[in-house]
Length: 267
Image 1: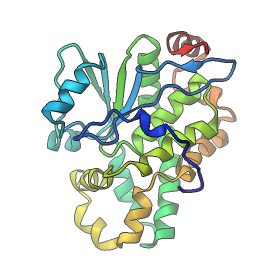
Image 2 (image 1 turned 45 degrees about the vertical axis):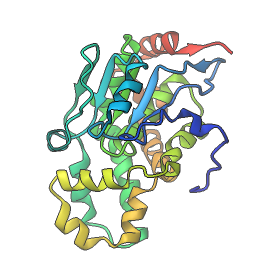
Image 3 (image 1 turned 60 degrees about the horizontal axis):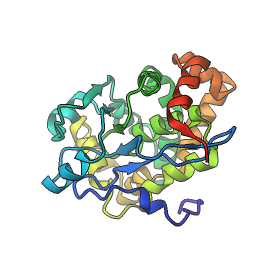
Image 4 (image 1 turned 180 degrees about the horizontal axis):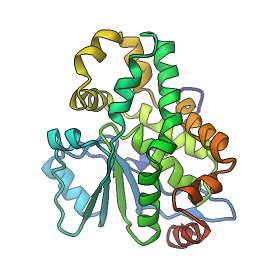
């Protein structure tokens, strides 16, 4: 899918929640220097506002201590998280950045190719526009905020870049990061409705829908590995290396060392 062969067994990362189809474990990947990320420590998801009673029972077994909610205020107010485990701390961040996508969309041709160009540029902006947020998440995790969940509305764009940068900090190969990102497109019943709701909740519904035909919307909803590559390419242009970028957002070598000490286990 989208130029990447998804390995067998990837579906085993899904937790199987009816109300959050994109909730999955993103540990288990090999890291540079040896070892793998511990499973059961890092999760990613779409919105957590439609969880069923059975979902909540399943989540209770994960012992999650921290939820990182990347949604904008209007998204959070319209679709509040129903997971209220008193043992978990929720961190919310501003800005949500989804509104910027709606604004940018007006400057691109209303075609599939135009939508792909839009998404490439949107992803290229995120490391800078949301750098403070991404740095805060990584530092929290390095300080012990795990098991944790990182999520937005669809669990693809904002979450995708946050997860990609966290995996990069841990030393995961770019090809593996692209596989993890692309898996979102392979999930049955996943984020199409959630992404549409995110657009509605950030105030861009009518004009956005009038302008973009279904094939263009489909291009925006896809977890195309070219999109996540655009984020890394922007990091390279602006900072040269991922380490230099991470340092610029407050994730220096000492933070990375603590992060790896907490999350990497030897094979």
